Length: 363
Ligand code: BGC
Image (cartoon, rainbow, N blue to C red; front, side, top):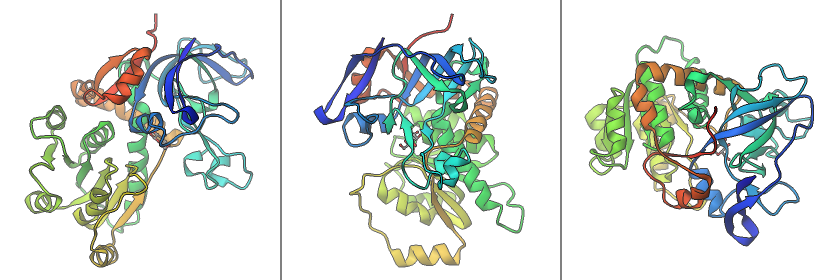
């Protein structure tokens, strides 16, 4: 079978032939991959800035946003049967006994850094026809979500951020009531964040560099949210025009905007950062004012990466809700479906919002 792999030491990305995997243990599931979403992390890996092959291998099979169909299950598997759809979790625990998060099934909070991530760090991904995975890393997806379930993994970035933000809000000694939310960025994560905010009843604004008449801006308005373009508004003018926000979900990875976002928080507000800026990025900031505000206004800024099983389950519930609230908008997030041999092209020339590789269709 074919796969798309990156060879970091030779700086090349190409289609490779790999043997079809087989069940090894009683908890294994053999899956036929249906779809794989591409994201900024895949683009970074394929430009050799990030990612690492499995130990002893010179290449890494790409792809971590998966949707697959179970074909064969090991004898101890209980949660999946052949024909079921599943999304695979990306991160896998480190081997160290002292890592309490990994031992508790929350490798997204791994403290040693020795975790692996399928398709990203030390483990092959899903851009191939068949994969084998342990049942404990697979999350069953209802058939009714089949055409959008490839969005589950990117949505988990948002559901984890929202779960963490709610935990922080729960420290407040009063009911926060209806709130204002800001999504920074109108890529897949920013737009999914806007959908979660709208579905949760937030008065929602999306701020991004796309023009006011872009596809992204239209999609935002179709949710009943407001769109503000950085081509016409600075963050400050946005705050003056529309007020500040209780919760901000950042999904841009542009350091000056990430730092500047702290100025958009209302008192007691929470800013979740999910974007990953280049290490060398710098940003000008009046640190005195920013730190004074954090303290004097009880603000919280936190970073969040990856997701646990509960975040996958929330993502599935959210997608079900989106398909009732704004079915066309959620489907419009996927702007291009291509074949495996088109991946190199799709990674260098992104079309629209979310690009998905179509591997197989179920019978
Ligand atoms: C993936 C996460 C992963 C992160 C860092 C993101 O693109 O969605 O699962 O933890 O990259 O590698």
